Every structure is written in C-alpha cells, then in structure tokens.
Image (cartoon, rainbow, N blue to C red; front, side):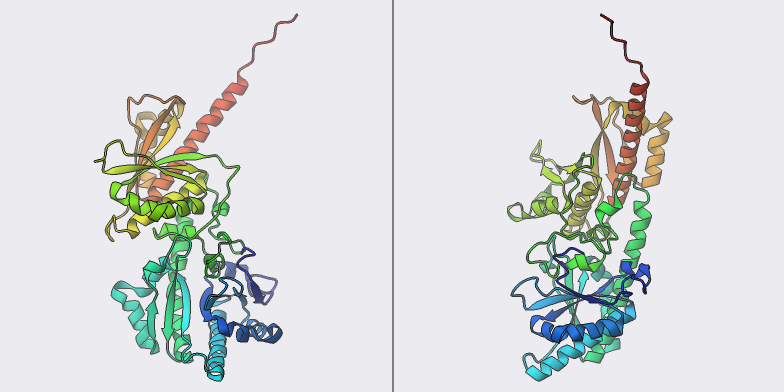
Length: 430
C-alpha cells in the first residue's frame, strides 16, 4: 500500500501473514467502511488505545485514512483480518460510534456504510434484487446502494448503506461481505485461469494480487485511496468488463507495442468524455498513449483507436475500452463485447502465424476463441510489416495478441541467432 493511503495503521504482527498469521490471508478481500469524520477521534482513542484494543481483540490490521480528503464529512477505514475478525472489528467500531452519537447528540442515526467495488455489487444485488431483499428480510435492515452516476475511472467503489440497530447492521455485514467475497474469489480464479494463457504479460507490473503495494496514484480527492487498500486490483475489475480504478504505471524498459482497436463510431464521444477528460484519465491509468484516428469517411460505422504502450498498458487500456462500451450500453446485457483489433507483424513472421496449411492459425483460434485473420496479398509497409486481424471478446483478443507477439519474438530471436552465425568478411591487410 502506498504511503499516501496508509495515514494511520494499527495492527497485530500475525494479522496479515506475519510470524503468527497465515500468509494466504493477504489475498482476502478486506472490509472497507465509511465513518463520520467526527467519530474518528473516538475510534482511535487517547494515544491510540481504543483502536489498539480493537486490533488486539480481533487480530486485525486497521488502516484509518484520516488525513485524506481534507474537509470531507466521512473517512474510510480498511480492516484486514479473517472474516470473523473483520466482523468483530466492525461491531466494535459501530458500538463506539453509537455511544459517541448518544453522548454528543451530534447525529440521530449512525448507519453502517460498506465500500465495495462496482464490479462486485451486481452479484451482491442479485437478479431482480433478490439477494439484497433476502439480506434485508433476514436481518431486519434497510439497505441502499449509491448511484452508478457517482463512479469515475479513479473511483469505482459504491457505498452500501445499512440502516438498523447495531446487532442488525452487524448481521447484515456478515451476509453482505459473504456475497462480495464469493464474487471476488470467483474473479481471482477466473483471472488465474485466463492469465496463464498470456505469455509476455507481467502480472507483477499489473499489480493484480498486490498485497502490499498500491496500484493507485496518490491523487487528491480519492476516498481513502480506495483500492490501494482493497487488496484487489483494477485489472480484476477489467476482467468483468466494468474496470477500473486509476493507476500510474511506468514501463520505461518494456517494449512498446501498437494495437489498432476498432470501436463503434457512436461510442467515440463516450470514450473521449467531456472535454477529453475520460480518454486522458484512461491513458493516465493504463500508462499508454491513446489516440482516436480521424474517420476516412463520415459514414464509417467504426473508428480506429491507436493504443501505444507495453503489454501491461495494452491489457489495461483495451480492457477499459471494452468495459466502457458495455457500461454505455453499446452492447446488450446478454451480448459479449467483441471488437476487431489489428497488430502489425514482420512479413517474415506472417507465415509462422499462419503455419503450414493454416495449422498454426487454426490452433490459435481454437485455443483463444478469437477469429484470427492474416489477409492475403498485403503490401508490406515501409518497415516490411503486415497486419493481422483479431476479432473477439476481451480475453480472447488478449490471449491471441500475446500468442502472436510470442511468435514474433521467436522469429526475431532466430533471425538474430542466424545473423550471429554468419561469418563477417575479413578485413584486407595493408
């Protein structure tokens, strides 16, 4: 976690994989709550005694993002522990706030507010809201969720507000987090399965399972540097096509790749955003250069988006574009977002992509579920390169791109090896 996000940290040595705790807990989804700013002092206590007591009793590590969002009426608290530890710490914090509210008469009600990434919230709500309604009925609470309109590319967390007594709110927290953890674990499993098929993609650089490093920039206005504490990455969200949160990624040593992605012309405005804000945020988040080419014809149904950056930046930028098209309803809820991408390959590698009798390209299509086309009779460009077309949903396209890049690297390595073996003509003696 970045220094900007961990303003005040309290915890037990074994709570998050130290000498007394299991390492696997680092990958568990933490509990994140919002508390009124005026109660933060009471939660910490004199010389930190109250919060230290909470962490000791619950074997948890608690991050209080006290100094962030100066002047904000609410502050984020992140609790890292077992499921039981998170729930116990949450209960103790709610009890402190209720007592403080009764003593000071500042507020009449202190609801429980849980922060959850938008990519998980749909599965919490359930079809036609059934999951949420059942939790309300079983726990005797009233639950509301903040609007999608409040989301930005940097803030993909929604606020789940639970109203009721302390006991009722605590019971609801258990059920809510159970659903969120299930969704998170499914995403992690899906990510593991998919990324194993993507050679050349640096998972550490993507920060997918970072348990100690923030993947967010220290930007003002972020609520507790949200997913720096959330222990799951923006990339996980991109997998579910809802991506993502802000990330400043620097890949100065990675090889730059260029991908030409084709999007529906009506979607261009949504990708650019008001005064170009969205596309700037997207480029900043992915660490890529993103340009939208001018149309060859005003009636063209698609526009070309040129993305330049290393593999990790390509993954993030393209994932967010796929997600944006889904969010903006350019594809129906039941319809997969399938886009066409073009990448250039050296003419010497094009044959290898096709393979003898089309064997390689057929295997590639079967493996990735993407349609891969190497157009015949292409005229190579000035760099002696030709286009390969890839059509498919996000993971299919990404897997195909990575496999083709792998073939290109193999060809280049063989060419370099061959050049090294060719003897250079001896210099004439004088």
